[in-house]
Length: 323
Image 1 (cartoon, helix red, strand yellow):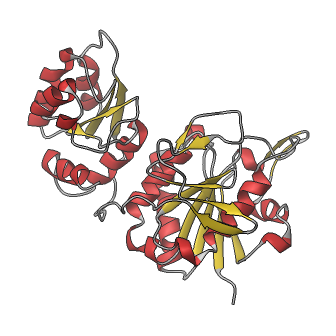
Image 2 (image 1 turned 180 degrees about the vertical axis):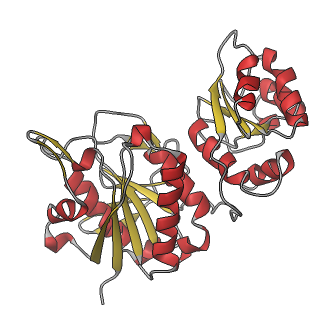
Image 3 (image 1 turned 60 degrees about the vertical axis):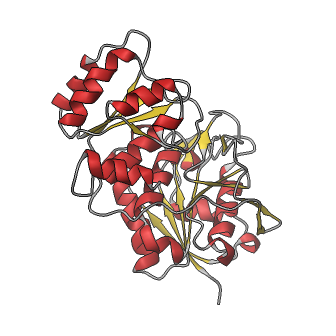
């Protein structure tokens, strides 16, 4: 009996046509995949979503819950979610954080496209075919959430979008992809990262992400908290440095039980903030929490999930230490 795979189709670039304008349903996307390339019995479900560049945390949480239910409650062997590339890496990682034990029951693959479906050499059909192949492959059970583009399979924790125009739009560098789809099957290339700790409670949507820069005014941090932010992620520089002008405010927010997580605009090692650099060590001393190598957007997702637990700074610090 072939594996059962659920295709969750959002309406983004893969589904768009411009001449004449139109948006394909999930069934129409699936129809573009040759039947002999389908290694699974595929059920299609169209799901409501904003364009990925305008997606809300509420929609991201809803997609994560549907993916989890498909594996844990509905008995599917795999799930493929089509998604716009702008925020695909954040949605993929958020699902990875909250799907829990359901990831051990089946495969979860997100895919998308950089070209509209009526463009010359549209990449959507091939990306979808490869994603469905991966979702049907029992060898990927327990690998966590994967992103499939250009036949490559990337772990949600490691993937980042680096090209908004080419079909090889994402990378896991400096890590290799987890695998690739070749000749209708999955070829393993590297072990996936360890699974994240178990999430508890509903994620907190109100987390601010603030990019630091020379001369930044610390009032930006307090203004975000005054507006309702339950936590703050700072996008630092280098190995996790933030301007000294923010240190007093970081200390104040920590005392108010508002977690402040420091990520970096650069790739960094998955270690404690105090081990990254002198600037990171100073920030850690006043209460900042290190993102452990996560990109800023993913660090925000992780803090949203951490704040779903009962607790503030202490719980968030423990959560990130186990990522």
